[in-house]
Length: 369
Image 1 (cartoon, one colour):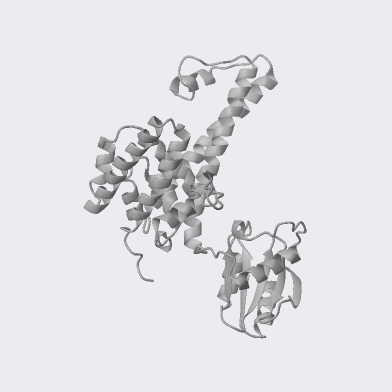
Image 2 (cartoon, helix red, strand yellow):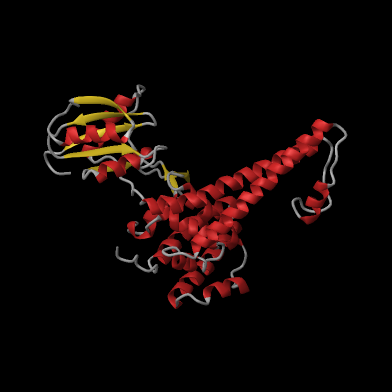
C-alpha cells in the first residue's frame, strides 16, 4: 500500500453497506457511513471518498459475492476481498456490530494482517457454480431416497432381496399399493421427489459433460483423469474450484488450501498435532478424499485407466503412475500400522493434492486475451 492512501473498510450485507474511512497517518476512523447496497449509492460514496486522494477498499468474502468488488474495480479503484476465516479476533472482544467490523477491517488491512483472496472472473464463477449445483442436487436425491425408505419402513414395507435402488428394487416400488388413500398419495409424492431429483441430476451430468469438452477445461480434465479415482466430473471440480493452480507457489500451499493439513498446538519442546484444519476449499477436499479411497487396493492399471492415459504426454502419465504406486503403498502401510481407514484416506488425500498440483504445472498456458 502506498503512503498517503486512505483505507475504507466495508461491511457488506444484502440491503446495506457500512463503511469506515481510515485516513493515512490517522489512528482513528474519521467517518462511518451507512448506505444502501445499490450500484448508484456505492458509486456516489466511492467517488466522494476518492475525490480526497488515493483510496483502497476492503471487505470480507460472503454470501453477497463479488459484485461490490467488481463495481469498485470498474470505477478504477483497488478493492480487496479477504478471507473471513483469517480475520484476527482479539480475546475477550465480545462486542460485534457492523460499524466495528468495518473499522476492524480497515485497521487490519493497513497493518497487513488480512489475507487477500483471488476474485474469479464472471466466466470462472459461472463454471464453478455448475458443479456446485450438481452437489446440491445429489444431496437432495439422497434426502429424497432416505425419506421414501423411512416412510416404507414405518409401514412395514421392507425390501431385502437385493441391493436397493437397482432395477428389481424399482420394479418392487412401482407395485406398492396402500389401502388408505392418504398413504398412497404420500408414497407417490415421496417417489415422485426421487424421480424428479434423478431427472435434474441427469440433465446436469449432460451439461457438465459438454462443459468438460470446452476450452480451457478440456486438456486439464484430460490430464487429471490419468489419476486413479478421478474422472471427468471430479477433475472438472478440481479445475474450476482451484481456478489457477500456478497461484500456489508450492505443493504445500495447495495442500494447505484444501484444508487437509493437520492442525498444530505446539509450545517449547511439546509438539501436539490434531485433526485436519478444514480451513480451505471444502469442495476440493471432498473430491480428493473420495479419490483417495481407490488407493486402498493394490496398484495396477485397469483397462479404463490405460485408455484414459493413451492420449496424454509421457511426463503426465509418468506422474500419474508415480502417484498411484506411492499412494497405494502409503494407504496399505498406514493400515498395517493400525491406523483407521478414515485417517489413512485423509492422509492419502493430502498427498494426492500435492500430485494434483504437480500435474497442474503441465497444463497448457491460457491463451492471451
